[in-house]
Image 1 (cartoon, rainbow, N blue to C red):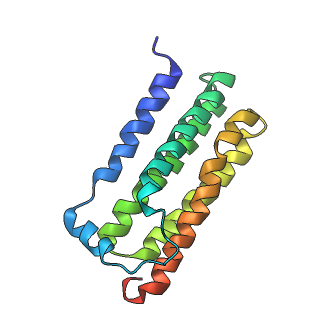
Image 2 (cartoon, helix red, strand yellow; image 1 turned 90 degrees about the vertical axis):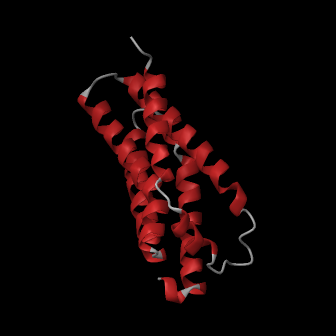
Length: 157
C-alpha cells in the first residue's frame, strides 16, 4: 500500500501545477501594475508558497494518520483540497480576469476556509493546526498586498 504522505504530497503537487494556467499576455498585464514601495519581497513569494504548501501537506498527513479512512478524515481532506484549490486559483483567475478585486476576494475566501480548517483540526491534532499557521499568517499579507495594488491601480480593480 502507498503511504499516505506520498498520496497527499502528490495531490498537493498536482493541484499546485494549476498555477501554470497563466498566459504570457496575463503576466504582461500584472507586470505593468504599479507596486507599493515596501513590496521588496516579491521574488520570494514562490518560495514562501512552496513552504506553505509543504506545511499544509504535512498537516493533512498528521490529520489522516490520527484516524485513517474515517468520514471525518475524508471531509477534512476535502477541506484541505478546497483551501489549496482556492489558493492555486488566485493568480490564474486574477490574471485571466485582469481584476485585482477577484484576487482579493479569492484571498479572503481562502483565509476563511483555512481558519475553519484550523479550528476543525486543532482538537484532532495540535501539530497539524500549528502547521497551518504559515498559511494563516501569510494569506492576510498577500490579501493586503492585493488591496494595496488595487489602490495604486484603480483602473485595474
